[in-house]
Length: 263
Image (cartoon, rainbow, N blue to C red; front, top):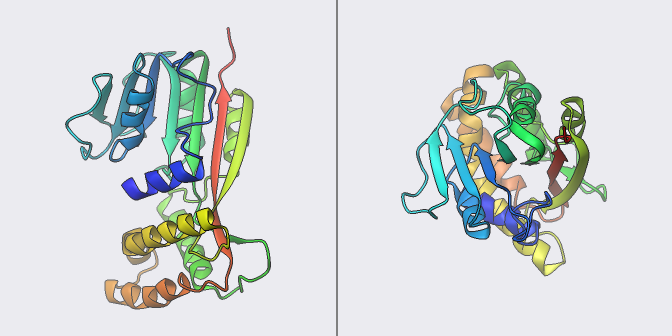
């Protein structure tokens, strides 16, 4: 999670968000849903010392020493939120795919309800499907085949792992205005010639390799009826595919943000 955070920050040129907040225009109260290890919330607390930052997650894995304006709580965001309506100025998610059965209803609509008029929501999500612009990714590419299996098993599990291009429309349907979408490319390995993108790709490759078993085991065993041994054997070829630099594949990072209308 920490590595994912640093990679996305690098892709976004060091920016924590694209919503229009600055040191001269700080958000009053911020909610970071599924905060994970809490790095985004902690850096937001440093960046905006006058703001109150709240991070929530199912797991209490955040560090104990944080800026004085940052607090963490163990909460399940799929349940009713224990906050007053119209309480926040900024609500944020990052890499939460697989957490929700209905992100539009469970997160975006609730964010609308809990934002003050004029407040902003921002979702930064990376769907698993690889993309390619130059035709070098064949239909039997290992990571592509793995992603198709992941999508199939996630549908059986009633968990969305393909949230990305829908975010913009979901926000509009929930009532947000001034909705903006930015899409960044994250190479699957070090194939780019550009040194910066090559470095990002190598970091992303390592993250995918480290997390592959964890991404696969429950989905594939519970919903595709595969044994752990079968899964691990199949992942050998998937890992090999991530080392093929002749295939110029990448993931898309969707950063979508919108404003709740003023009353």
